[in-house]
Length: 414
Ligand code: CAO
Image 1: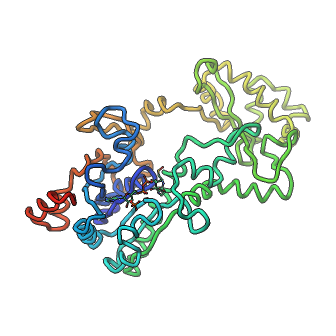
Image 2: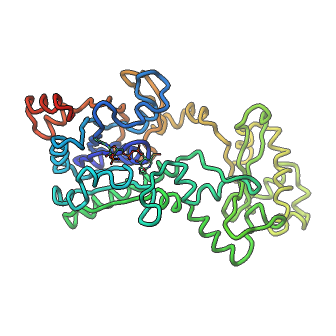
Image 3: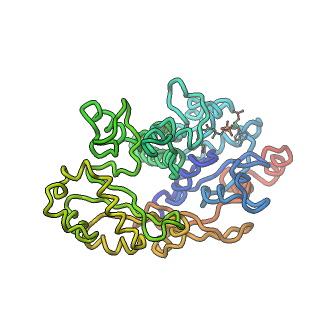
């Protein structure tokens, strides 16, 4: 069995944030019924298409293991079908612009009347406040949640991260909210409202930056590259590639960096392993030198220290550096390109990178479930075609007969 066997989710999500959440729950065994607009479906089906008329990778990689039903929830008959779906589901998840479900006639009060046990889960851009009505995409969330102002180099503009912390990050938060609410329902018998704002999700992931904001009023942030030779302003600044923890770290060039944009490695020069690191890079002289042999003495010369480390790393590939430094307990990590990650055998073995077959596009690579449960196996199944399961859901979940299904189709309701 799977962890969420028996849980049925009415999935009104679209684009990225919501679909990542319901995809995870589907991998854990929930029956996820994706409701899509007849004829159109989730907008990402046709966005960033690489093959004409075939569901995009954007869509397929975010909607595995779901069933798709088309339904016009603004049509009166569609609302009736939607109401019956609400009656049979444990969770409704959505990430429309604020108020969209209310405008369809399904307020939280109405949904509770229809099914008091249902959990109503939403992603929104902002929580209650001045921006609550705004539409939000990934990079807007990164900018408004503290990600962009703290990412990049001190002398450069704010930068957004490649990791989708606004969308997929908030989807993860929502998934936790849903399973927590399901757990509480075991005790209370009642559903509840679960809301995650993308701004809140990003800020949660920027927690250490709020820590630093408060430390700033008590003196300079000594682990930031601005210390001691630069200046600090009033807000947590951008720290380049500084480690953010108590140990100095930086990205340095490795052999081949002139032509390979990913020939770099992150090295943490932590005090406990410093002697071995100094010897390895040919700086045994540092061990006896009071200018170098304590963390405090090195602190004002971190740039110089990493320049010396880089002189050595440039003579080795990033993997050779890894092999040399790991036995010395020097924490380090090669900058792996997405190409390298997609080919990494260990990630294939664990199911973190999976090859999936699709009837229209053939085989493609996806990221599988990164959360491993020992007693809930995951089988990654392809995303549904638009409306692929409309008939079976109307028939098997709602008990509609063939005539009723035919008439819903004729009226454009499904
Ligand atoms: N039948 C009939 N109508 C449907 C439907 C269905 N099955 N499914 C959706 N619709 C309607 C909605 O009711 C809505 O109509 P109204 O505007 O009349 O209320 C409309 O389709 C589109 O909804 P939308 O406003 O959410 O879509 P958008 O493309 O304009 O905005 C987005 C997209 C993502 C900016 C917005 O949904 C949003 O801010 N969501 C919350 C934050 C979020 O999750 N962002 C992450 C996006 S991933 O980067």
